[in-house]
Image (cartoon, rainbow, N blue to C red; front, side, top):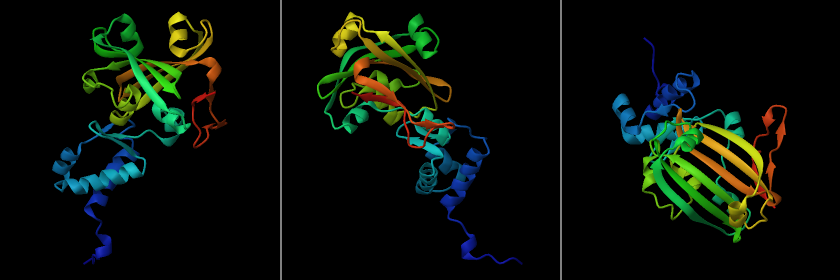
Length: 254
C-alpha cells in the first residue's frame, strides 16, 4: 500500500490553478478565450468562491490571464505580443510627465452605424455605436484630439456612461479586456477644425494614430488620435527580435 503524507496533498486552489493552467498552456484556451466565471468554477469544482478566487489570482499574478472588473477573466496574450500591442492611457501618460491633465467631451452621439462607422469598426451596418470626440489637455495646452466609436453590442454600459470622472479610453481599459489590436500611423495636414482644436496653424503637420481593438473576435472600439506634429514624436526601442522588454510604442510630448 502506498503511503500518502500531508506533503503530497495540494491545497484545493492549487489543484484548480494547475488544471486551468494546463488548458491555457496546451492551447485549448487560446489568447482571448473567456475563462469561466467564478460562479461557474464554484459549480464545476464544488468549492468555495474564495478558493476559486485564489486560483484565478494566482493565474493573473503569473501573467496567464487578465481579470477585468465587470467583464470577467480572459487568457492573456504572450508577453512579446503584449509589448508590441501595448495600449497606453492618455490620462496616465500626461500625468506621468508631471503636467496637469484634463479633458472635455466635444461631441457625443449614440446612433446606428452608417457605412463609414461600419467600416471603421468592422461591424455590420446599423450596429448600435457610441460616437465621441474628446480633447485632452496637458498643462492647459491641447495634447490630442480623440475621435472614437464604441461598439454598444460589445460594451452596452458605455451608452449610459457620462465619462465625467475618466475619459473614454481610460474607462474602457479599466473595464474591457482587449485581446487583439491593429494600429495605423500616418501624417496629415491640419484642416481648419483640427487646427482650432489643437491650437496650431492650419496646414500644419499632424501625427494620426488609428487603432481598432477586439475582444475574442468582437469589435470593441475604433479610435483616431490626432496629435500636433511639432509637439510629438513616436518612440520605440527595439532589437532584431522586436521591441525590447520594457520598451514602448507611443507619443512623447515636446
